[in-house]
Length: 240
Image (tube, rainbow, N blue to C red; front, side, top):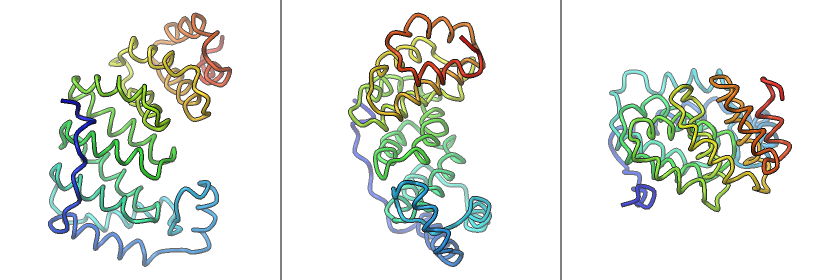
């Protein structure tokens, strides 16, 4: 049965999630900066409202939120992420992403449908890219059977799901499945959207740090299919 096809569970009201969300909303709301929030919302193309928390402030507050709390299980991670995503302000989504990144090693392949939901809801590069590289990537590395799910994601009509498939191996280095990486780039080489074309170049540029000759040869072979943006990004640090 497809993991992606599994239903996304609801977010239970009690337990660790309730404590985290209570602390989180109190801490974040108390430090809100409306003037900065307006500028942040404009910078992020109005994808969501903001509280106006700078990254250092937000991370410091987050440490106080989780201080003294027990380590979560997968059900806790799921509940916290989903409940954060139900809140409109973007900083709550960032908290969820950071929380999943920190605890993904305690989760199974069952977290993948939840992560897909997050990627495809209130979608923008600021959350999608981190979820792809730091949550989807580790889940697939831990359970290679999930590569079949990535093969489905790369063909998805949702450009953010396809982008996540392209980027999920971003941190794999020598463990990269180069055949799959290159096949994914070819599969989406004609995509009309900037964010997919950019992701193709980015994942190739990152892998070029490990095997520049393989990337150079791939780009030369497929230059007629790849967009100029993808080619430029792929060869940025290694030259033609």
